[in-house]
Image (cartoon, rainbow, N blue to C red; front, top):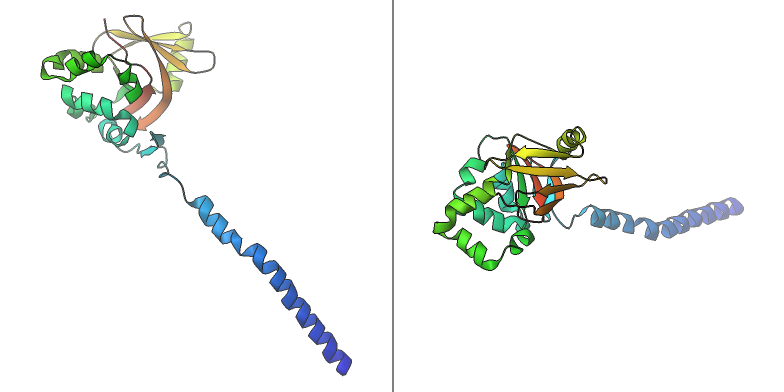
Length: 207
């Protein structure tokens, strides 16, 4: 009897010891999982993208989404100054090549100031509508059209002039404007409820 009790006691102590050994290894797991699941920035909604670290919703309009992006503030101000917010917030669909803040900084300060003034509204409108193409053209659409035309496709903008999209060997897209200037698409296919936005690194200019 004594040996049986002793055996049971030893077995019980072994179970307790095993539980004590396993406990520290299991305890950090929930904390680690929580840390991993907590994002540094809000996750993009299904089908959406992140622009400037902020989630864009594919159910919002071009204007609504652009207003959320910290790297598109100059563009939003220009659209408002030109009185195009209502148009770009409409049904569309539109394809917008959206210059980011760094792109606008490449434009001389004096020129930017003049364009943003009331007297420069017509010129500003002309430049901004040159960045807009009717219809919804994704990067895949541009690639398909370019492949059928020797690697490039001429797009007729809302402004009326053409903008040439060149699809490079690595799949990236470069725009060439009427003055021979070039701009690179840095982020493609930001889907909107009324079109699609492609962020670019340089302001393109009509003739």
